[in-house]
Amino acid sequence: MPDPDSALVFDCEENSLGVVVMRLLRLGIDVFYAKGRDEAWLLAQQEAKRIKAVLFAVDVEDGEIGPVLECLDSCAPDIARGLVVVGQRPDDTTRESLRARGVAWALWEPYDEGALRSVVSAAMNIQDISHTRKEPRLPTTLLGRAFVGVRRTDVVVSTLSTDGAFLETPSPFLEGTQITLEVGLPGGSMMAKANVVHTRHTGEPGVPGQPVGMGVAFSKLDPGSEQRLNQFLADQVNRFAV
Figure 1 (cartoon, helix red, strand yellow):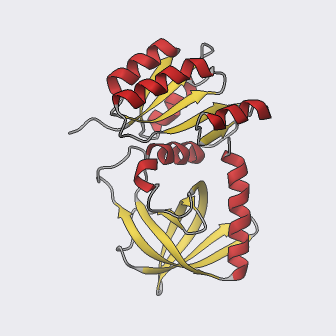
Figure 2 (cartoon, helix red, strand yellow):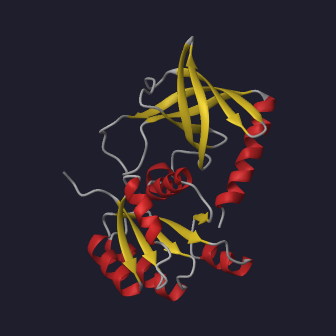
Figure 3 (tube, rainbow, N blue to C red):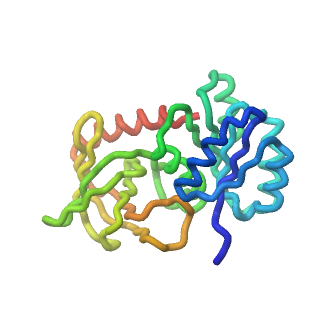
């Protein structure tokens, strides 16, 4: 069995991300933990092919993490890795610097288990989705219902965009199935026609921590649902934006 894909957690001297490591392990995500640049650089050199995402504390200096990212790129240049900053939301200047480094995601405290899993899974999987989706999917923990005729399946919407969603369920419909999806949004329910474009079942190989279920592409939304979806996604962007 091949070694699992992993996330590298780069902590500062204050050990602010120790709890994050434990939460990731409970979610089934393989983790390398480094305290300081030397440990992180050594792990990057040894495990570059396994590291698919880098989480780092907001207090980690640019001069500390820069050599580690360069080492990862040098040792495994074919892997696209998502960068996630974790901690208390800093000032505008610091966030601008983070964006300039290419940091794609932020987990500003407080955040829940669903946000942690979704953001890290997305960061670990960016090279698989970057060329196939028109819009990025944002992490959510919304409840929904998927219908095929009179058959109903309760789902958790773990990612959502204007184009589609991933629906967590132990019993996904077959690829190519046309469904009706109902999702409860803060401003009211969203109804959408959608097609199942891929499925993920228990035991299938893939990125650790990814849930089982089905990815769907929207084919039709009524104007009210589209408006509520756009507003919700704008709020989510603000929540996870660097």
